[in-house]
Image: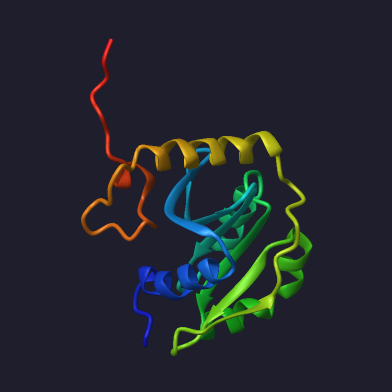
Length: 162
């Protein structure tokens, strides 16, 4: 499995999160940004920023997600993750984990995510409220949606009544 574009990483990383017991969504809004993947398990929130190459940009985005997530990772193909690992002190000092996805779709975590030093519980609670509210509007499966879809696109909308 060769990774050509960022979305190629999605399957293995979603599986990794689900195996850890998380319900997973794609492109979740967090304070004006969109986290590539967000997992919720009870009251815990995990966020992942996926990038093919630019680890510094991914790290900046991941740091922003720490306001709403208990733990945050950057996910990259193995080769790019090896280059990012050379800057492990930067990831570790920020509390951001690093996930490396190999050509067989296996996900490794050479740098574990620390508990977020920036977590604002009320922001996390807002993400969870939105998560649960949108999930309650899904009376049936949306065609082509595996349950990990983008919030606005995977929600069945009903007309408002006065």
